[in-house]
Length: 166
Image (cartoon, rainbow, N blue to C red; front, side, top):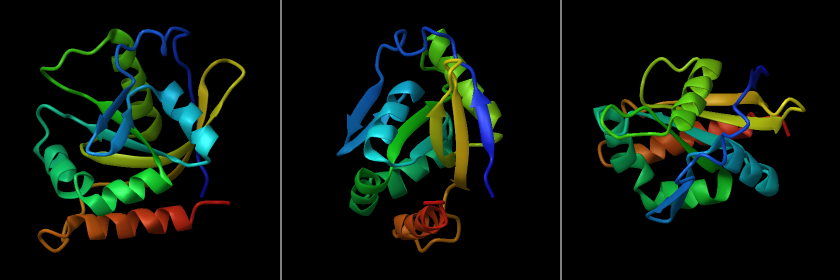
């Protein structure tokens, strides 16, 4: 099933960001939707939107350590998706533009808890916003074998990608 959402952003969204990417352990994480969209368009990959509370959410930290830090995930992510971190910290300062962007995406995708991962495609609109097409949603891989959480997570992610319209 295809869902399309329109997101309107301030014209200054991309220019107000101090840091728009973060390369950690072989992964390139964008924080700016406009830059992630450009990379996704260039590489023909969906966006992997990771909604997190980086400085307070225990399950988010657990997902990062038990899935995102594993080589299997790093290899998969570099091949299959464009990574976008959408952070909702309590103690870490953010620009007003970054907060607004993240809140807009949270509302558009109906995110109500953390961690949540949405795979989606984006298209720019003439009005300067984005149309988003949902591919599917993931979270922490509950019930996975201890130490092999990335296997269950990647299996679920691959199912979503396989069902994606070509």
